[in-house]
Length: 135
Ligand code: FES
Image (cartoon, rainbow, N blue to C red; front, side):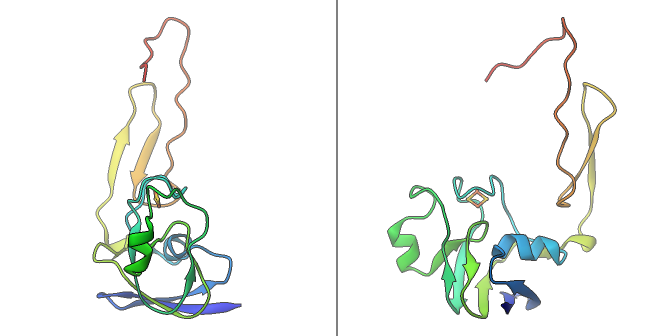
């Protein structure tokens, strides 16, 4: 089933499939919303559902608390629609309108452009003898 989603206050509108996350649908249709882990762990994508109903999906309780849910919040990277939705995200933007920065990694000529969905950095391959960064 397909629903309609509106991101306020910008008024961006696009369709969202029943099994799609709000963030996934936004990126697919060319809209940026803040995110980091995309696993329901960090809370960066947290935002408010102003109208409609969503399934919160799988997430860590530290990223979305019961108090958050009572206030109408959800994690856009995990939440899927159960109806048409109006959500609040002041940082939403049209990806094609955003400036692009290019990063070059010290381990080679690999480049990354942010924030496009396809721009995930490849893991650099280290040669024997090169320094490593320990967490
Ligand atoms: S991006 Fe980390 S919880 Fe959604």
